[in-house]
Image (cartoon, rainbow, N blue to C red; front, side, top):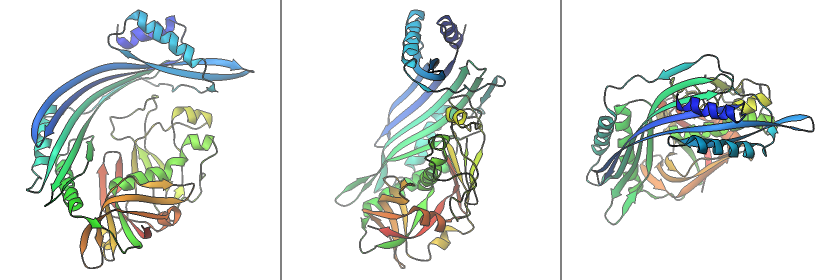
Length: 420
C-alpha cells in the first residue's frame, strides 16, 4: 500500500470526509564553491506528505468550513499519524470560513519533463565553469552555490483529484566581487532556470561580473532631479505583478479591487497574462489545472484571477496559482530609448508600487547614467513617479526576455521621473 493510501485509510477511519494530500519527493544535487574552488558536493533526498483536513460546522443555520494542515514524514508511525489527524481536526474546528468546494478531479494524469542527456552533477559542474570563465583579474565569483532540484509532486483530494508532475529547477546563488585599488565590492545574484540553457547562464554570469565591476566604479549621482529611466526584465516582472495584484479574486470578494472588468487600466495598449512556468507544471496546490489567462488586453481589464477558494466565493472558475507573468512587447528597439539622457537601472532594493496611493518608486544601488555624452555607473539615489502617468506613458522594447517566472519586453522606458 502506498504512503498516500495509508494516510487516506487513517483519515477515513477518523471520520474525515474532505481532505487534500500533497506528496513531494525531491532529489537535490548541490555544489558549493569558495574562491572558485569546489568545497562541498552534496545530494539530499526527501519525501514528505502535507495533509490538509477540512471540517464543516453549522453556526446559526449557516455552513462554515475550517481547515488545518500537518506534515507526515517518511518515518511516521500509524499511532503518531492518528494523533496528527486528531490535532488537525481539533484545530480546524475553530476556524469559521465561508464554505467552499474542493477542486473536482477529472481523470488521473501524470506528466514529467523529458529526460536530460547529462547527469545533474555534470550539469552543475558545467554551469560553474561557465560562470568562472567570465572572471577576470579584478572581478570574480568569490562564492558560488549551485542546486539542481528534481521534484515529483503528487496531489490527491477527496473530490477525485489524482495528478502527478515531475519538474526540475536549477538555482545558482552567486556573489561576484570586484577588487578596486582600496576597496572590495560585492553583489548578491540569484539565477533560476526551469530549462537547460547554457547560453543564458553564460550571459547571466557575464552580466553579474559587469554589474559588480560597475558597482565598484560607481559614483554618487548628483545634480539630477528629473530623468528618463530604463527598467530591465526582472524589475519589469515585479512591476507587472504589482499592477495586476488587485485583480485577484480575493480583492474582488473583499471589494478592494481598483478596477472592474471592461474598465481601462491604462491608456497604454499593453497586455498582461498569467501562465504556468512550464507545460509540466500543469496543476497548482489545490489541484486546479493551469492554463494561460489574459488579464489585461490593450490596456483594458479582461479577467480576474485567483485560487479555488476565492473562485468559489465569487462564483468564478479558478485559474489556480499561475506563477509566470507575460507582458506584451513594443515596437521600438532599446536603442531608441537611449537617444536622450537616461538612467538604466541594473540593481535596486525592489521596485515599490502602491496602486492605492498611485505611487511608483525604488531605491537604486546601481544604474548607468547617460548625460547626453558619456555613460557612467552611478549609485545612491531613488526615484519616484505617479504610477498611472508612468503606465500610460511607458514604452516597451521590441527586444524580449524569457526568464524564470517572466516573458515579455526586456526593457521599458519611463519618462521624466523624479530623482532624489
